[in-house]
Length: 418
Length: 164
Image 1 (cartoon, each protein chain N blue to C red):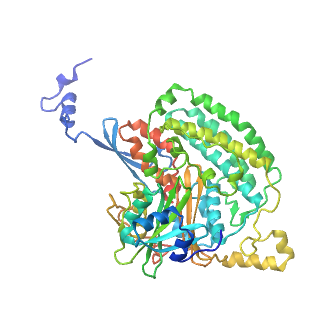
Image 2: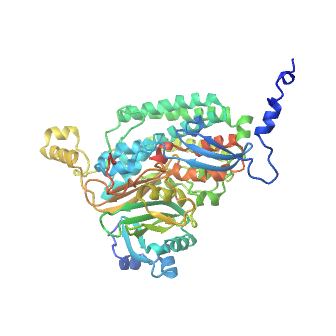
Image 3: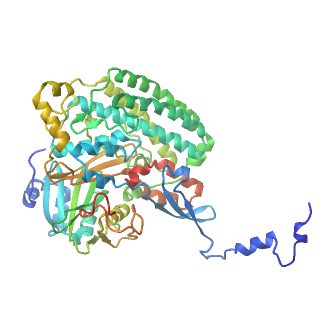
């Protein structure tokens, strides 16, 4: 190989000299050798449009600042301009992986304002659909998390089962993702005839499918090395930083709203709350997988004990009448007309309703001033709070670990930005 | 759920055993200006200048988890802004809601980030969307909207369609 350096003009510096010129060697103790790296907003591992500004020293993260708001659409402001029943479709769009949980939380809050009694069948249907939503969300999380780590196959497997769940959603509500199936006062429609059979068929195969994912991941040495002892979060930090849901339970705090502050008749179901004390990314993986198995159990109990009866509350001024009644009864037609054109008035007051979403505590704070439009609707979203813990989990670790940690907290940017 | 209790006196008499009320009456006798127990939820109106001390007392009393900080704009009434805190106790399985009423001219209230670091994002959100300042916040910048945005969209005098 010819010696290139010997043929150059003496005034032009060579490669080696150029390199030493532009990268000054850091002196001991100086801070000049750190570098600011911009990750996102279009980075594939940020699950949406999250921008993270990293300050790095070589490969080590020394500072991390999340920058959010790219998906801000002002849903809270929009809610104030709609009738109470028109807000339900907006809530789907907040967290597009768990639309039913959002529907449920909003409906429960307004039902509390109205002090409505919901029939048992509607409550059980809500539980069943919420657990299917949890399975749906966790399947997406598992697929994308494994893909971030480099295990591409699992994604195809989990999306295969997720497709089945989406088909059930489409069957019951007419929509795959933006379901809007719950109404203030109950459900939109009776479930279709073969709905329970298709759910039964799905949850019968799910445990062995979860075994299949575990066969691919749980014993996989690369996966273990990337996850174990990464992104540690202590229980005190988790509580101080507002972390909820699986990351909180993976840090050893035994708290689940379904069991501790039950809503929608969750108190009638028997299930375990998986807790791990390790607090790392691996613990969050294990906790979520066990949660999926518990969700299957809850679905089975809901199917076995599904009560008969009405699916809407007996409140004609709030709940739209049946189609049949509208054709035969004048009263029903008038109520229908009034609810659609001028909404229904909700007594003044304020409520906060929290439910356990797949990502943690989702809360709706609704304030009414006695009119047909909400005075204020505020959503407390789990991902928004959990994102604050990202820096604590990542500082001192490698850049590659940031990807693993973001995957493990399972954020949805739609609900962070709202 | 029972009847709603709408006055401070009624709440203090009926819920004398409540841990939050007991702790606050002992530590800050004049901090609670009003109280309400409605639809099974306890609301305490706190003098805005004592909010940080009240939060610290509640934290010591076992209300360990801050769920949410948000705001309601009661335009054109005064005091205009109602900064709302939801605080949960994992041990008691109980929730308490605090209100701090803030006037419309140069609205500001003490930050509770020193008590609960998780208030950081929530308070930035309230500043961004309502324009209420939090004194002592470590980095009070806009969080949802761009830095150069004018106005605070969740205020009631801000049009739903925005300014065009």
